[in-house]
Length: 293
Image 1 (tube, rainbow, N blue to C red):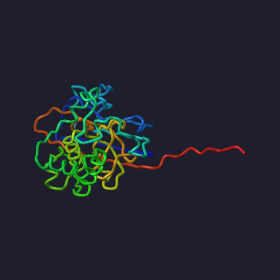
Image 2 (image 1 turned 180 degrees about the horizontal axis):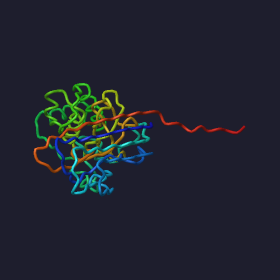
Image 3 (image 1 turned 90 degrees about the vertical axis):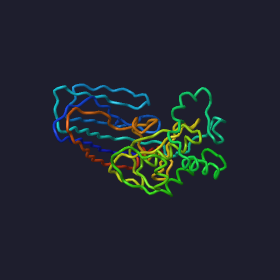
Image 4 (image 1 turned 30 degrees about the vertical axis):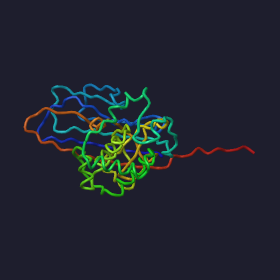
């Protein structure tokens, strides 16, 4: 599918402020599952320096910094993107490690150290452990069935709500309230996966999913499966991730996948964020092959 995305974030300040360096994670992943065709990124006020690189999570990051003399009441970051998604089947793999064929999941010794930080359960709440283990029992400890059932259970038993700003709430709070924003549902999915031994991480990006309106970026989860790599699950929409999602950044914790991180200098400042996001999607054109007679 071809995505055309226009995403503008405008930070407004009540008085002029100085801008400290910022990190921008707005360049989507470009690999065998999605391919960037065109990307422009405009920043106002204009930085005095820009540098591209990759962070510890492997995300493409643009670091920008501003003149010390800059005093502004607005920072605007505008991204324009055309991208093709390539994976139409989210299940085009087989598990290749015997350690992941039964729950709790484990990993081969040669890759386990690299995945350990993604397996650490952040919350030690009894309700979370009961939730994960009950699903595992229902599917007779079968890993892929667990992931599918977990995705479906969260989708069917929680109410999606819009909350444009703020950190994700705890997995236990989402379980108790049976409601949450997409980032809350993603955190619940991730924590339940980690309870059962999986390496799981938080993802930010764009989608045309049926339950999400193109007003903000979307969030979901990825689980590492030997033979399949990092595979996405979207509990907000109850879907295994394929070509209707655009991955921008991923991280062990949500903050490491944030589209913009940075700070400003000033006293007694009130700040606000306005977001304008437009996501258009269409089928990719298939080249026509003519056969000569």
